[in-house]
Image (cartoon, rainbow, N blue to C red; front, side, top):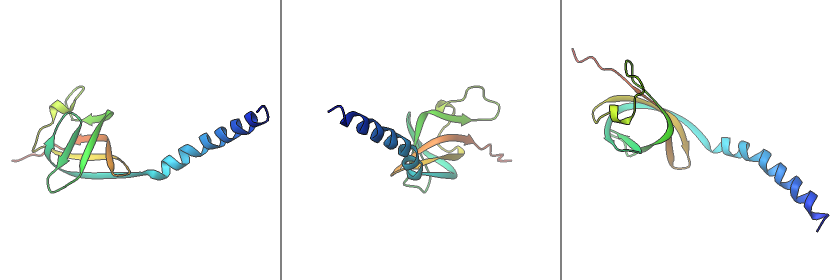
Length: 104
């Protein structure tokens, strides 16, 4: 059993060094823009899209002129740019950027 402990420790070290590499391969960056068609406390959808975008606690929301913006500042019909990462079939948002549209 004593001889097995160093081998197990080495295996765990090698596996932990490989994990970031394997995880990085699974991530796929994306950037899309559009009009919000549905929004709730943890996700949003864009018009003409079947994709749901998940909002993380660390998702940064950028709205010019608004201090500490949150999802409550966004509504259906707003134009946004989304940036994030796809992990498997789930799209996690890193940034939601509100796009001011001048209708004049």
